[in-house]
Length: 127
Length: 184
Image (cartoon, rainbow over all chains, first blue to last red; front, side):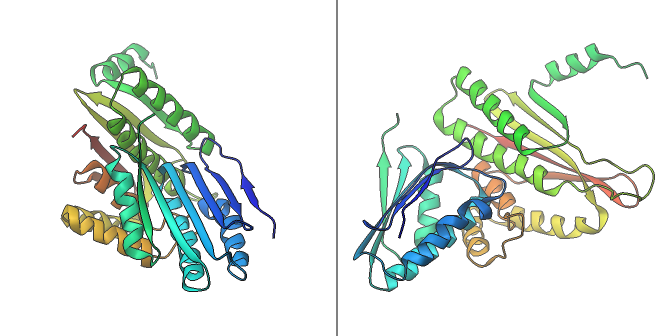
């Protein structure tokens, strides 16, 4: 299974998924007008990965901004991870937020309340 | 018509307009506007917190315009509004104001008005619960929005949504939204 590498842009995040190590990174801004199209390759990849996942799957979400259109797609990604966690892989979602970004922390907590996967809230220092 | 550009300029200056646009809202336009506003707020040395709030709310407001401008289809009535919108960003004291205006078909007003009134009736905690409910159970529209935008704007601004529907003709009204974003 090949890895997934999507380079970030002004409106879309960098996505790196390495099925051989079980590491997923989403970093940057996610504010595209059409996020379903953008997230489809990742959702499809996770669907494939769910068939034979690593014993642990480590997810880093490091978003600076995301729009509400992306928020539904991010939930779809998390639902895939929830299914993987219910199967044979232990999933952890590390939700990163800048130290005074209460809205981003709260957004992470909203997902935590919906998705049955362990979340770690990771505070980052302002650059 | 004799257009008095100085009159326009003075009115905008007096209203502290930082940026205004009227026309068709495209993806490229949104990218540029967001970049310009980021630079302006950086130059004004706004706090990261206020910058983030303005940016987030601006994204939602502008993408609402991008997805939801109604316009007359080809071959319909004369006096048809075109596919364009208006938005302005002004700063008054410490607060930013994001003002948008676009046409909406008359038969869609009740639904939108109902949603906005519901959002305005909720407390901060109720809004959080409502957001999660719509996020988790709401249907995703083909545009990807799924009705979260207005809830998010209300949550992030911490204000009631200030909106108006102005009837234009039998088929259309002009929908306007005025969002205040304060540092606290």
